[in-house]
Image (cartoon, rainbow over all chains, first blue to last red; front, side):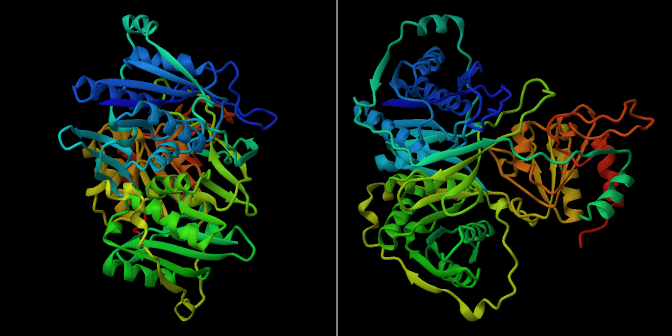
Length: 251
Length: 364
């Protein structure tokens, strides 16, 4: 079985973001970019499945401008066997990404598609569900545990839901989106970074895949959220209780 | 305008978050007929439908999908159901609360309808302009970062074809308490024709196994008036019982940071934060919480935030005015960062909680 993993390049999680003065978006120029942390978890899970002998190949795919190939190179250094880069403009919406991924699945025919549950730049949390819908595959979103049964061709997935942990059984092929507690992604070691330089990255264009960019959303402005008024440091529990009772009137 | 609200029910009752979705539908304005879509099977669905019919004065119709396939809220049949209902009903808007139910189902349904949905809407101004809690969230940083950026807000206009699909942040659309006699003008209840549900071959490809839930008698974290939460500073699952005790005394829900969940102090469904639950209670009390941006994103809309932490430099205190007091040798300073806590107490939570337990009044 082949596993496909979708990877997004985002502003590094440790970077302090700045809203552009013209309110057109968040500054991404001269900012450190990295693999979306949830995508790292997705890739790690795929690698572990391969290492356990249940999959033969891990293919990392990414959709975006030319720099996205660098992020794919990181994925190859972590251990992906090969990569596919679909050249596309930045900031295309999840529905278009899902259509592109479906087209790639039609070419590659993987038995599993792993994605992060959301990208930390726009937090939309849509792509995995959408590609599952388009493929008519079952979906296991927000996975915190994945167990594959090769004989029965099913995946048992623990999902982090509002009320606790939900367990589902999915027929393969399936789409699984990964949550924080699924695993701890590995670091790429220097020998693997060197090795990754010779691994293939195949390029596709949107025309190759016959996908058109559809944009039904227009960003009017991006602003900073309203600030809270400044608080005070109190000296004692008595003062706190007094403030809560008589100033804030919440107890 | 006509809006379809995807509703969740439990124990024969519509969930509050789904009623928030009705509020959001109402704020689309104008002449809007609102239909609630419920799915399930048997008696519990019937009960929930009756509750739904008189749950909110703005609801004019309740649609029910009654099938064993909906005994559990699986995304595959639900997405196809939304597709079917939209084809026959031609709604202008489809809304769900953005809990794990809505996040799981709405995008899948949107893909079947070839629509780009908008996630986590916090404000609606007009029927096609939305503010979505957008942009960067960050995870617990390896070093305390003194300067923090908050999230950004993105205002989005929908320019596509009908339906416009939204998931809404329930805490941003509180349910108004209605005084009208709802029983007398209950909405009609209609069955959805499910004969073509199986056209989607994915419907039979997922099966529900189980839900491992924490049974708690405390208020639901998402709707509680008071939330008491603990972070890494609580140090152990054993110590977390102090947080439980305090919550019990004042009738609060218990929350936790990602660090506390990852350390195994509490189960994951208590996590407050951008990737956990978003809460906005009247009072949020944080003990041993440093104030990682990822956590702040989940509670910053609380009306009053109290923070107790040993570390006076913890980010959760950033922006607090530190008065001149003998024990803090600092001048009044206003630190120009994000302002989190309204009331801060620099002290050991293991001293402060017992004192609070002793001095705070019992829940009303």
